[in-house]
Length: 301
Length: 255
Image (cartoon, rainbow over all chains, first blue to last red; front, side):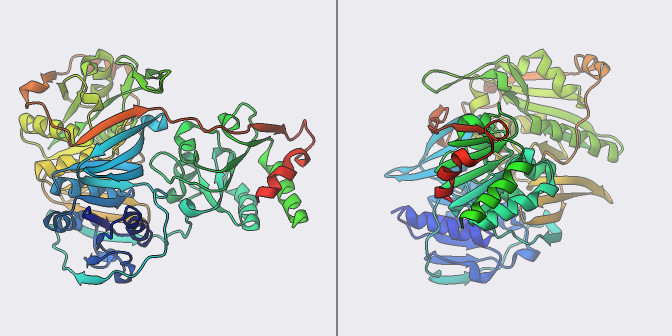
């Protein structure tokens, strides 16, 4: 059986990655910072302290060394900025490979096989590694019910002298769980601005959907948080139904929705790429289409 | 102050074709500077200005495209003083660990430095790992996700933008900093900058001058375009087809 470790500093990541290890048939060992109560699913957990006064940059080398000294073969990390730092150090400590943004992981008798997107989603790269660190996209694994970690050992963090944390501000973590959602609404740049979001939120509440977005909505319009971005190096979703509103349908985004059951797309541009990649397409202005769509659903209910 | 900026030449969108068997055909001529690395070059230029001057050195590793005159000028015209390139077939498709190993050997050959800057990830393979691995290989601090970089009493300070917040770090000694794409808006080089870039020193090393063949720790099984998911593609035009009634029945069953 493989010796799998998880290094993370977010509750949702710890849950998904430990769940992932169990899916792969191995109970993992966890190294984490944050809230001590976050340890789940692991046979043993090493707790490095609260996140508010520690940067991942300061503890990554120590976390990686713990895994390497205890014979870790595969180290699972998330795809957050901090997750990438943990993965760099883990790969180097193991003197092994690092795989970024894996969307699919299979254990083999002599290691693991992974799949990830490259060239902006134009292609999928499949790799085989004997050992190494893997950053797993949110949604790669299903989160099951997890037992509490068997034992938690407190480890005092050895802070590096070269880098020191001066200030840390935490945003309220958003509670969306796009990866596990059965219904997802995606907002694209065609949403225009914040003023049209109430319509989207009303629809989401009505049908019980989570709201995600394309990269420009998170990074340029900045009306949705970055963790809601679906596509290359963002979230991979696999809902039963996905409603796409104002998304052009660029491959960088649609690789994140390829596993959706039925795709319904609304876009005012009849030539939008999304219409080649949907089951039902509605050409029209979302400010007209959405209110009618909402009232038709209400009438039916 | 001496700053080394790592950058990559990547295939532009026109430089990637999908073959019939879904494998990719990459052009060596339809190339561009990886957009994320343009931000790293600009960050170096701005830091140099804030420090009252610095020597800025470009460093890249790839196949024969490193000798592409347009690409050399594209990098040097943005404010670098000189450049180094490591050349070997296939280096452009190397994994992050091999790339970092090659860059580390090149950095050691360049000699003394105060800071190394990288972009967030390369525009093609986008591992977002080279900066991290490079710093660890060189035995110096490495900080990613840096959205603001400044000097405070001669001390390097970096702000990291994270998914759930932000943090400010104080960094001692030489370090590798990977900057985000929103750290700055890169300036567009003038015609004078581009002409001037042709006169700047640029050294190309064969990989064999630096090291024996780097060993990859991951075996690449394939790179292929994803299979297209078949979709029903039933389209209605809201205005022309009189609203949603035609398809609403089908859709409502799903919601």
